[in-house]
Structure formats: structure tokens, C-alpha cells
Image (cartoon, rainbow, N blue to C red; front, top):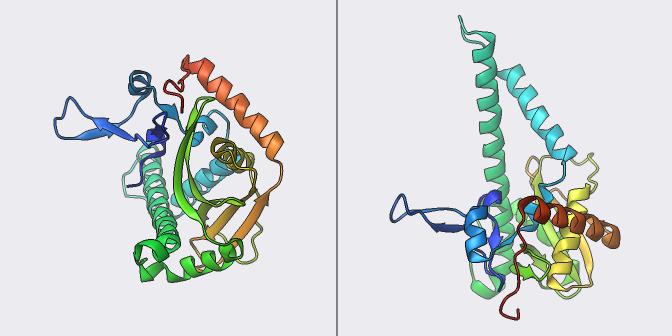
Length: 254
């Protein structure tokens, strides 16, 4: 299951807790809220903490999607400017959701391939080139564990895409071509450092960028500013905790 980012919470043992029973709709589940977290002593995810800071790269991408929608949507006769603007917003949101779903699927198929030797689970042939390019890029680092979740005594949790004793990798799917350079934004660096700190790993850290527009094209970019990025993340964590007056604790010696 791929949970929405806003639903990423972890118990003090590090187990994911993305949903709780919906009391108003018996038999159904809903996303965890901060109110639920207070009752259950849940730890917010790294991605939740990172929302405390602006993400210029993401905002530029959103603006581009909006502009493309405005340029490509045909106007309807008699439609007001406000009505057209509303359709543009909805169309951009829909296209963004479609692209996110494709990215999530590619991400999942890469992890299936990592686990294949143990579970025998096959990945979708439709994403063969994406998987092959990714595996070729990371094969130099040996075998990996995937989807390892944790909680840290400082009051945050997370789930790491790929790691072993020497390397930690987070997978990012996005549109880019062979002539495009890929660099790390501050949120990438903070995420990698927070994950390594959360797992107690002193290791090399990478973002594996996987192109959704050119199957098989990947970029493996290393993060080398660990101390700086960790300090930045811990400042955001303190801000999040003070803003919400919420400080989850390790109560059972984990």
C-alpha cells in the first residue's frame, strides 16, 4: 500500500501507522491525524517534517504544470475567465496526479526487483527499462534491504527505500532527458541525512533519479553534506514540535 504523504506516521517501534478505523464509517479506514497521533504516541515522518520548509523545485514544477494546462486546454464557448481558470487548476491537478501515480508504480517495481531474489516476486514488464537502468546503477553497491521503517528517540520516523551497511538510497521519479543535469535540493539532502541518522548508519547517501519520460535513464547523485543537512533537519523538527506542541516519546525503551 502506498499511503498519502500526509498519512505517514510511525509507532515507537518503527512500525508504519498510516490509517486508523473510521468511527463515523464503520468498517472503513481513514488517514491518521495529529489528534490520533497524540493519543497513540505516533512519530511524524521525515517527509512531514520537511513540509515545514519551502520547496522551490516542487513549486516551479507545479507552476509549469499549471502553465501547460492553460496553454493546451481549449476554451469553451461562453465560458467566463473564472470558469476557464477553474478548469485549468483541475486539469493541472489531474495531470500531476497521473504523473505521481506513474512514478509510484515505477518506484514499486524497482523495489520488487530488489526483493525478487528472496521472494520470487516478478516486476511488471512494462517497466523493464526503468528497472534495468536502476539496477545497473546500484549493482556496484551489493545487496540491499528495501522499505525499512524506523522511529528515532528525537521524535521522528520514516521509511528508507534502499539501504545496506555502507549505502543508503532514496528513489525519486521525475521527468528528465539525457542532456539534463540532476542536482540535489536541500530537502533531498535533509531527507537522506535524517534517514541515516534515524537508522544509526554512517554510510554513503544517494538519490537515485529515475526518468519517467525516458525509460532506462537514471542519475545517481551522492549527498556529501551530511552534518549541515542534519542540523537543518533538526531545526525543522524543533520547529514542527514547537508549532504543534507535540513531542512523542520512546516510552518502552526502544
